[in-house]
Image (cartoon, rainbow, N blue to C red; front, top):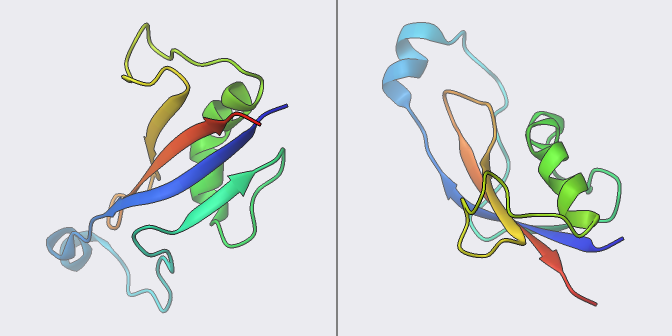
Length: 100
């Protein structure tokens, strides 16, 4: 099983949508640009559950040595660019299998 590196590439913050649709929240995403995690079969500490569930399929496939999602979607077939499902503050993650 390969390890998969998860890197936070981008964070968005849609304040206009938050004002219109979101109930006030006391806590939002704690991730910062450049944060990295290593997937080794379980959710890495510090990665939110919602983001993990969104990327889980891709993590599992990359850890098995699979890739080339959607017939050549990524330039690096051993990677995927996945965003969490928070419509108010989406975070984009780069997933890359690590050769050991």
